[in-house]
Amino acid sequence: GHITIARIQTDKQELLYSLISGGIGDSLDKGRAKSIIQRLYNEKIVSLREAHLLWAAMEDSALLPHAACDKQRAVTLKKMLTTLLKEE
Image 1: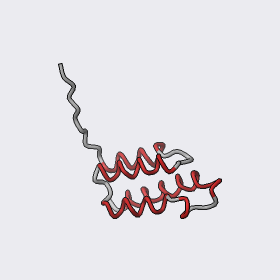
Image 2: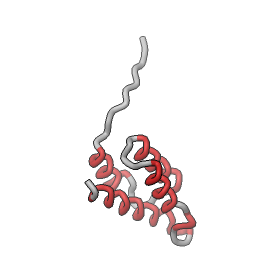
Image 3: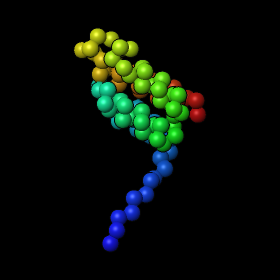
Image 4: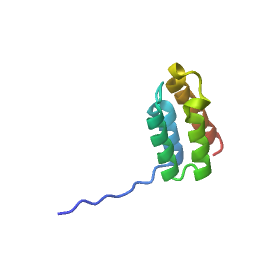
């Protein structure tokens, strides 16, 4: 026997909606943010340049004091993804 791994194409809007509506949540740590941005790049939803811009906005230094970073990171990424949806 063998295992076949197939890559399933995800519809751009479907992925963005799912991330905005529940995939991100109310709080987002840096590791999870990086994973989401990497997936967006891998799925060709964002370019390498856009991925770098998204990541720059997720850095602690771009956010409020550390206690609120994870919450602000979630709000910021949701807003950026909503903007991508509007470009469709």
